[in-house]
Length: 201
Length: 201
DNA sequence: GTCTATATCAGGATAGAC
DNA sequence: GTCTATCCTGATATAGAC
Image 1 (cartoon, each protein chain N blue to C red):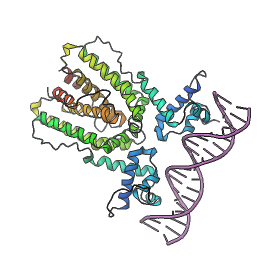
Image 2 (cartoon, chains in turn red, cyan, blue, yellow; image 1 turned 90 degrees about the vertical axis):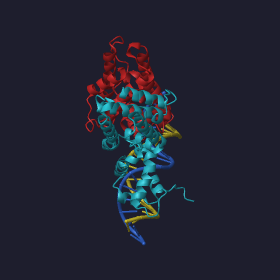
Image 3 (cartoon, each protein chain N blue to C red; image 1 turned 90 degrees about the horizontal axis):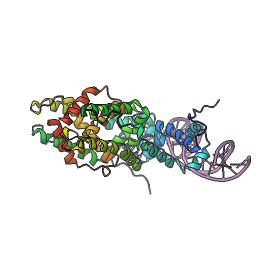
Image 4 (cartoon, rainbow over the protein chains, first blue to last red; image 1 turned 60 degrees about the vertical axis):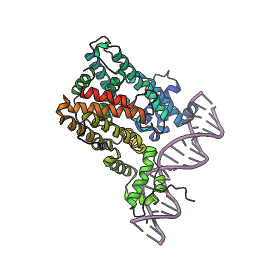
């Protein structure tokens, strides 16, 4: 008879984990202001009083959750599984494809992006946590890659990393975040070819 | 004694305009779910019943407002005032600088970006309106520009436009939306020089 | 420590006077 | 057409039993 859709967890999960898992469902689906403690309670299978014993208020629960998610780099899986020793062109293509597939293939990642962006005005520290854990890691990695391959003749590795990531992020934003890939179609392989071309000359 | 901060408008403004102006303040500041009809009423200086006479519900008011804002291209002022006949390098630099200054100089534009992104899951049609009115216009313009300057030797103008806009948008996102420019500093002129360099070869 | 039950209040929306 | 006054739902948060 229960209308709850409880979080799937082993019974060994701590209450803290149960609450955070329920909060994830709720905040990702409805945003901060739209999230309802009652639904978190229902999904987590604990009482409301328990939630308030673990977290002082809704805001603290929200920031704890989002900060934890921003640290889970595997969600974005930017680190390509492709070999670092491949030819640069195939390495870069592989790196980009991995990122594009992981981001747009996982609706949770897109929803997290929407929340971080949408709440970046009211929760700037969350935006910064995301930036340093996800964006900076990717940029630093690519900068390092470009700098350590002198044969590529990259004049300014940091700028090239910005161009590379920026083009991909913008592509994802139009296609997946704004649901507008059909309004301005762009073939992924064509974009990648041109992008890599313009960076490695 | 009134605690209201009424929208500044000439008395000639219609109720419809007053309501939309008040809604703009409120939705931009608090997002969709966080916005309060009472505050819109207060800012607009009309009664709550009047709001509901002009708009069936909160959602309709929200979509009407955001769609109207997405059409006001002058908010983004992407069309650079610089002469179309300039040397390509100075034209592109000027174009980019104009965009960067207009976007990051106007907090309202940043807030609109946050709302569009943040609500793009629940209001996909608003995201698409923004994409077609703002993003597509810029991309088409730059594509046209690249294509009509054969001396630039642009192999794929559409891709180059994506790279150009994407790099700039990503720069704005990190610096202004996510408040994280200091975590991964990048000089604007240095980025622009490298970006233009990599596009015009 | 966890639950049930409730206090408290603010939200969106409407009825009815003018 | 506009306002005042109000309904009713549902929100966050807490008190007190176990």
